Length: 225
Image (cartoon, rainbow, N blue to C red; front, side, top):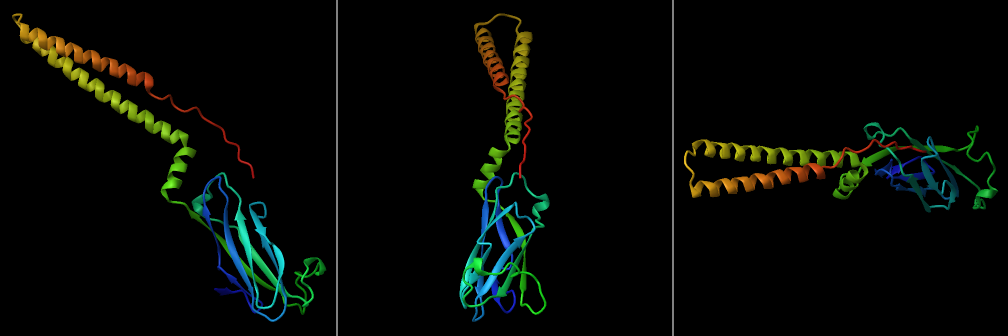
């Protein structure tokens, strides 16, 4: 628990978001009134288009607390090195006991003026990358180029292995032919078996080649704020 001054205490000390592409994330901030009078608060951020803050203003009763939910909207790309420069500012100031409705507060409630008690609490933002298995599966789905390239490499490796094995069989068959000076039934059977194996391997090679996935076409993604 970190204290923002004499008026309120704030927990946690920083806003931590589980960052995942194309999915929103939220962090709850508990603000407690440590005084015997009503305290009004207001939340500001350097990136208002990226976050929803509910409530962003309010009045907390004496010795009471309020939970503020800060939601990070779905993002289309990772920030550099997962570092975030966004900042939040929580302002608090005492208000009269009957000022429970925000509409009753003057417009200059959170304006710095001589003699006014206006406390400010700064909070930084921290992004935490998801590292669980489910997130890894999502990453593969979101990166079709990577999975397609892996499939192509696997198919090529299998094709090369089949070609190598067919070449070895052909070499053994040629050796048998050279050594054969007289026809014999046994050798004919061996030749027939070898020829059959070569035929099967050639068919397998052609099938793998035709079934190999084509390289993915480049796609253009448009990011919107």
